[in-house]
Length: 312
Image 1 (cartoon, helix red, strand yellow):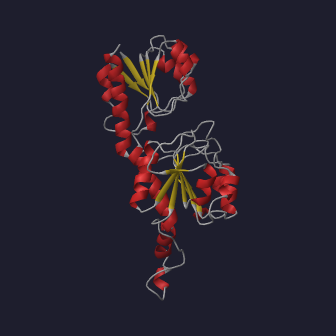
Image 2 (tube, rainbow, N blue to C red; image 1 turned 180 degrees about the vertical axis):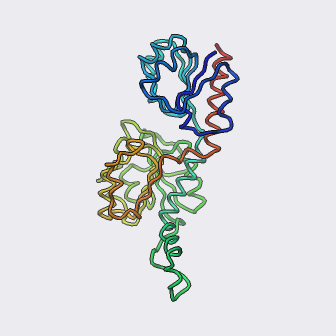
Image 3 (cartoon, rainbow, N blue to C red; image 1 turned 30 degrees about the vertical axis):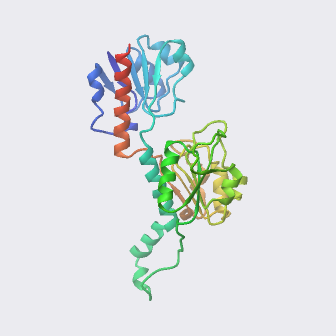
């Protein structure tokens, strides 16, 4: 049994990266360019990919291919129709990064809300040493307690974020892009009502036709001037040009994004050119990537392979 992992650099050097050797001859590559894929999978029975695309042509070149394991939840990097036509099983991984994403969500919220970087700089530059009082009130912030926390997408991660928000004594409401009620415990609102009434809007939805550009300039304009917008869901749900414009116009207090419409970001991205960058936090798609999350991801890929082999 030949097994290859096409892009191990996307999960890092983890202690369990070699567990796939148990199943046969295991080959791994840090990165695979589109031009390299056919050659690297042509004699493989099982292929593991995180972000490398495997389409019809690649599958046709891999006569022995029986299983494609996606080391992620989304399946958009595999031609599912072509796989079905060739009898190739495609297996993804779900619910491995819930705690990690929720943790980063609140890291962004609290850093932005409490202006942590600003206060750190105030002390380290010596400005605090010059103060004539014991404290500093130049960057006021508000408490989460009693505020309305609007969640877009109440799946596993959205529910985890809701639980943490409740621990901060927030009132949780949500919007469902599918129109389905996901939780009797929380009030479901239409998107406009959620944007108008929430103090924090946190995005945890998948990217699809219903959510692409869901958060645009007109909807950001509906938000409270002191509100925060957070996206650790998917790039493309928040229109980046519209958000940059809204930040520059001070329509909202601030925003934080961990995901982008193009990853890595293009240097021309308008978010990199906002006038008051302290009101915008950006992180490089790391919310999913705690050590525990990445380790669990590989363990779940391992279980997918084991299950497949036991049933074939």
